[in-house]
Image (cartoon, rainbow, N blue to C red):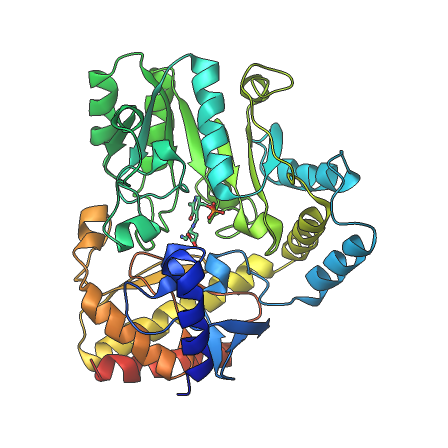
Length: 427
Ligand code: KE4
């Protein structure tokens, strides 16, 4: 496989950009080799700077549930851009996107648009602290909520991938306010509440973990979190940056029928452009400036291009049969991976929720961070390259999700399964 152009571009990039990338997980640091410089995407495929084409299951880490360059999204962005790219003033598009979201997720009575999932999570936590007057936060080992200081404590995704789950540069005083529980272990949450009576402002959770690889909530776990938060006067924050409009149109809160106090959104609601959002109970959201005393702002928050892309994307997802199609394609992808592991005898655990899934190179079950972290990451790296050489692009990290889009076909999934079997056979 020719990689001259990606190698040349990567060498240039490393001179100016730390690690040659603008987000660590892209650097292939965990799997080795040269990150592919992508020049275009169309439907379920991307093309790199050397003309190599790949069937894409990264999907820009979740936003591209409609695939690359979907006509409805492209046309909406082109039309919006022709009228100006940003005004720094309210626009109708922000209102329309807010109405689409609040109609879909009844727990969100009011919301604020921001530019990323990181901003959404950090702002939701600030609002929760302002509302409760409390400082401490409970998060889960292996969950990732963006790179705000308070959240880079035992974080998943790239932080776990590169072995810095608690980042340098976060003052000990900040980290001390963040308490860490174990995902799917309600007792670990109850113990933290008992040890920090009346001090916890909120619990923030990925309702379906995506950043340790995909780990579904155990039966009753999410409802248990809601109960324990209510009992202790704390707010429950669902970080649905990945799961929102992914695991159901109404996200994990619809799929599992648990109503959080606050929700963080991102990725899909921007249709591939930078959008995040936080929202929830109106009495809590009243804390946000200019209504209340908790300040949060953003030059490009709700900008017309991003809201146009997000509205076009959510409108497509609202069409009949979309989530049945995503569920079916996800199930086929899961079956293909399981068949590849069975045919080759490789110890793989495949976890899936809807159209997000992960093949863990670990014996089953994988229901906790500890079990996910026991994966053979070197084997995953070899599998990753085996797929890449065969034209299939998945996340360059064991601790991420693969995403199936609406434009992957049954033939695509069958092709990927065949390549997975060959890649596993060559381990
Ligand atoms: P952003 O700031 O990257 O838009 O969102 C942060 C975030 C918040 N919450 C969840 C559940 C997330 O998954 C993320 C970001 N996800 C990672 C990959 N799992 C983004 C990829 C990257 O870091 O480059």
